[in-house]
Image (cartoon, rainbow, N blue to C red; front, side, top):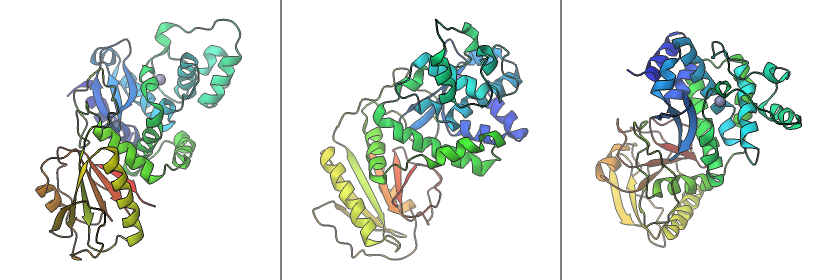
Length: 355
Ligand SMILES: [Zn+2]
């Protein structure tokens, strides 16, 4: 077991489940560098970069504190909120905003007192105060305990997706364990963040799946992660499979909206789209044509497994469903996007909710 895993276990045991749960939902990538850890976003997932050497040099309590530090950056969406701000100042402002709440951080970590700032302000407010400072300002090198450089790598068009993913991660973490009091406001803010229209999200997720250097699936955190991961959006021909749950609860209007988006994806990626109608068993398979007959066969129970038994490979599978059915235990080796008409949960894959 590595030191990150040990730290997670320790946090679970001491009832700090919220932090452990957020970290467990991220890809964890070993990355030796100047800092012990850092947050990034790639391939539609949050990524924790961490240095076994630097992280290992901390005491167990300090390791917990560093994990908490990273989770707070996620909860406050610091990694996606930099905008056009000055990178260095934003880095400091975000650390000042969160470190004051964290016990056992390495003593040199940045806090409001370093600049004689008041406590309990937001990162944006600390940023403004930093901007008002005259003359050159600097902090000792070891005051920066983590790496924020990956924040700048998040592309503008991926920002909304990163926010949605953070929302999803935080929501899951809250359902696992109690949210620390002083994070309640941050979570409220996060949940109120502008809802991204579902079709825009769908396009972004498919674009993520379509990147030619897309090397991992969405089923579990990957161990290895190319340092040079900078997914280029290349509109290569995509093999898209669309499964439709015909067991009853998909309204015709939702269905038509969904198919219109699928057709847009088909033209964007010059793709063939295969449609599979499934209730408790696969009822029909055909290529998407101009018209789709909505007089579906099958109105029985719902089982998602037959679709995954039938499809061994593809670039991305979209499943239109109410999510009430039997899931396969394991995710397949390709990305799956559940397009759902309900708020029900999934064991793996991405969910987009048509509202
Ligand atoms: Zn930080």
